[in-house]
Length: 143
Image (cartoon, rainbow, N blue to C red; front, side, top):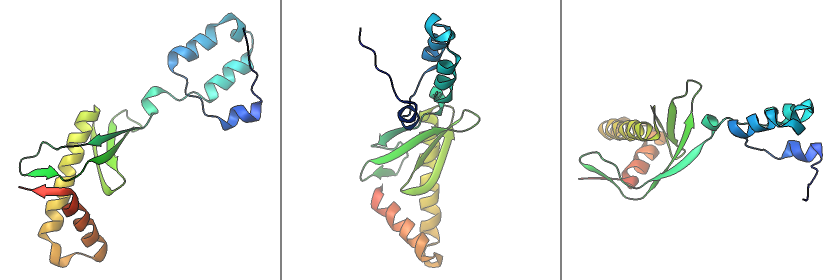
């Protein structure tokens, strides 16, 4: 069996994602429970699964009267209360829900609301909001 030692500085530069089972195995394994430094290091770099970000592509929306011209990348991230937040770096809109699907549905609803609000106020919009409206018009097809 081959083992490899990692220098502490290299260990600190590398981010390890250790799920709760692996962390439990590290804490209860006879070799490691005698070495508190190993357990402390594993806890220091453990990222609980619920804190991971994920990315998904949205190809279609289920809103009557609207379609997407192109897929939209959505990022999912849990907040401090465990609720899932869906957002897009392309638009300053977010949605929230207990699941990614609920967060996506809320996100799409907020996106459509923003589009309708900007479209209804177009003559009064600042240049930044006009840019946002143009981006929304380029992404959404109204039926």
